[in-house]
Length: 567
Image (cartoon, rainbow, N blue to C red; front, side, top):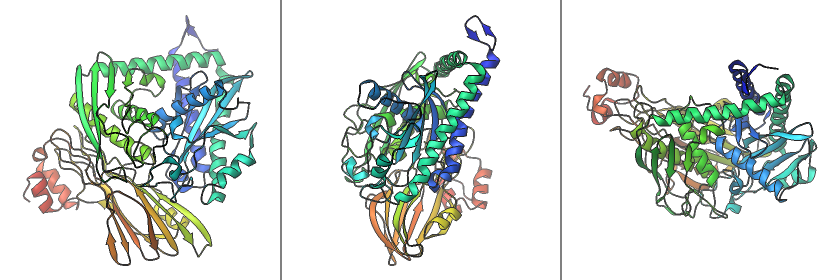
């Protein structure tokens, strides 16, 4: 057994156990991606895995390669499963059971993010819970891919599952599986993702048991408590350097997909001592369309934004203890059944994070960036491939520019604010689906001007090669580009153009539309947002401006207008 100082673990053992728990989660992430069938998981890594408390579901560790937006969501949903078991709304667990749940109102995001939750037993008692989330490319609903841009009720978005046992004592329940397959498209392909998701948890259980066998259950329990305490302490120390006061900001969602008017996020962050309180009072009311956010996603959006600002703080439930988020009741950031929510995780969450960045850059100008692209670029395409004689659902996510900061320009074509997910390789997409990418490049000119400019978005164009298909978009930042900071200019907004029969069509809601009928030869062109600029553009080094022009990032005319540099 490791040495102790009184009741305290020695530092080396604590550090080893911290790394070991992290490695368990990382290995679950890798197992999930490597075994999954769907490109959105296997290639884009739209998934996450973690370890959670047996008592209340609080976060112990999460994979470093998992989506940050799930950091608060999965501990919320695990807590809900524990509570529902305790009050009899959910069957009690046995060893080998795995619950499946995607209900947004029970600690979720949108319906496509499907969570598995599994108890890990030691000595006949639950030691902890393992949970993971994977984005399924289809969950039923009115449009292929689940991104119904004009849904007015959650039932239109797909199959909603409360916590039920998909695996019972290690065996897949054929009845539950049949119900799921009867309600989703391309159901025959889901078994690969389901098996991969379960395999990741089983690998995590094996690796965790190896750690417990080596160090002892009591030692690991003590280490978990100490790591949580230290994370809270480190977050408080990070917050303490911020001047006391209230920092205000706003962010805007283009529209809800139904009513073509912007939605407003109002945020006031109060810093007092070693705590931060986030108040969204005055934000827009619940909306008709799918851009409502459930509470778990709203909380997680704040947490992930603070993770961007203080990445050095170890991730556990302790890191969130100094952060208080007032429940935004009566706003679109606290959705209740039956409000539609397909845009909450991928889009609204990033507007919430943008509001946090815009507030905190006032308090920490040397540490916080201007707004990033802030859109996952959700493009779902479902149809039939006559050459292969089968249906398909393709889900395209895309990156964009990051905001400039005090030290340097923003990253170009970075992943979304909420994740580590990357666009699946073009070659994989063309192999799997009847499409051709005619263009795929940086979106020149999209970075917001500043002393340190924003990064550039992505420009791509996809052609349907054969058969018929239906396209749906749930994106954002089409009306307003990502915010510049401290005098920097906004990044270029998102753009979508559909070419059908030689005619160009721009969605009335700019970044949102559903069920667009396409046939062979039709094309979809997308330009993702550039990041916001940081600082006065006229303070940018003219040599850097000239280099941007030489590389083709801007034209000479653009830099004269944007930076005041006449080349």
